[in-house]
Image (cartoon, rainbow, N blue to C red; front, side):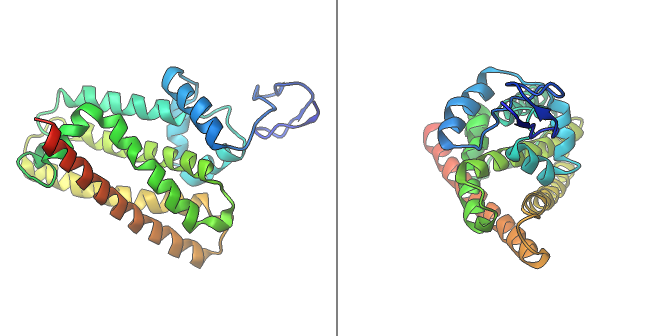
Length: 245
């Protein structure tokens, strides 16, 4: 098997690159592979590269994930596993918090049910947004010729970055129980998340569009995410109010 390694560009002759160790059978993502390999592998296995992946998601998020989708995968941590670890860590730290953002929603019918559901099914709620984000980014950035499964992957990594932002703020507010401080932190976190959405999509699709078109599409995607998030949160809230007591 002769060719070039998609991760390091070294000339390869065997099943694995002799320079970096990546498989030479790197494939384009498909829905079948996404479900049977990445989902199952993400739940039951831990890959190397967790902190490297986090670093990349906050220094060059769109560029790094695009490279991952295109074949440079050996250094990156599985997105599913990263989500599980981050949510699990956040839940553990939340046990020590004097107050947190979810506490602000107690007694508020708009969020009370939502907080009840996320208390027990945080991973499921976090993943529920991804298929809808992927569908919209697939339609909005269709010129990039990324298939739907590749949009699932890129949006999964985007969610990892968002969860890290939320996790950092959860740690920062651990010592505080004052409602004003928590509300201020929640507002700042929301602004940072909006900025991250834009930054991620702008970088990821930067090779497919001219600057003005890219800016417009990235801003549109941010607004779409806000709407989708709001709608799903309301649905989850109703489920929580009806079935969680």
